[in-house]
Image (cartoon, rainbow, N blue to C red; front, side, top):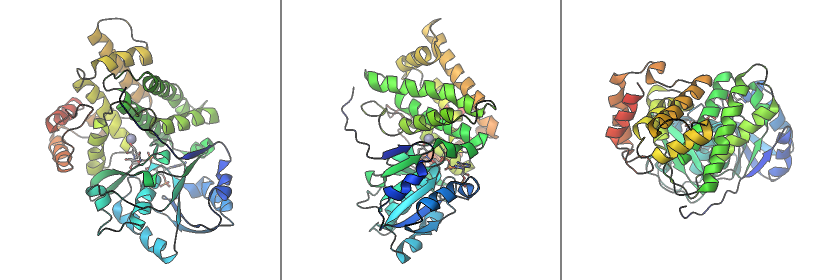
Length: 385
Ligand code: NZQ
Ligand code: ZN
């Protein structure tokens, strides 16, 4: 196992009806900015629950944070923050609202010239407004991690700081009942791929990390399809298990002390930045191709994955690895997400621009061995055609 230091300070408040806990969780004298997206919280009752819980607080609202939140939108919150001396941000929504609110919290106290430097130049921040969230879409893990992804002019880029890790996150599985099938699928697949990015690398004998990761993968494979099936889709146990799995998949625990990949995500971000494809749908296209192209580097873990996740024990190594990849694709198909570029109407002619963008963004040594150069990314995209 590699050396590591692990700390996750986010308090998780899990369960039905827990939005009411906001009343006690947020300091009574705080000036709160409640941030949200395009209005799903108004039609599913979450807005009413949050505002009822905040009825004794002073709070303001900032709405309109879009999927793949944009710098331009997020900067509009700065005036409200200054005018009203906001000192606490409450994000209510999915990963985009939480990520966008992290950027808002960091930009509000940024002392440099241009807050975009936090993302584009990875300037580390020294302060941020305190942030908490009510999560409405289990997927990204943003509710208890330090990362965020922001888009500006087609450039979708990540930043991270412990200062933007939410202080607490309310996880009420009941609020996920209003999700569309598309968003349920996206969430399960995103959490699945987060786990794979930290598991499917090379072995460092991290037995705890491996088995936690395998537990998450098995849970998502078991519960994901149930959240789409008519008979079980409203089952709060199913929703709760998915929600907790998605948080655990990217809260730092399974990634501590093991190598991490993230090539699938970085290539996927270019597909979203350039073509607007949903985050998870880029991952379901790229991951199987990464598994194929990086087969040698990942051989030992691919065999472990095939056996422990899919019970593949018959045949020679090549056969078992290929079967593991095939079953992964079948799982994605069952979750109704695309597994080829052609499924989203992209082809060979689109690859040059994606490689150019990756290079421009410095994504030229990706993967656990830093061996995924632009040439290898090209091979991955060609394999995904
Ligand atoms: O805008 P609203 O009205 O909130 O509607 C949203 C949005 O249209 C809707 N939605 C959310 N909760 C709902 C709901 N609709 C009905 N009922 C509910 N309970 O779902 C749509 C998608 O929301 P979004 O927040 O964009 O989805 P997701 O949670 O998948 O977040 C994706 C973003 O997170 C980033 C992605 O790149 C992408 O920008 N990621 C963040 C990470 C992190 N911070 O660690 C890691 C991830 O790998 C990922 O990159
Ligand atoms: Zn992701």
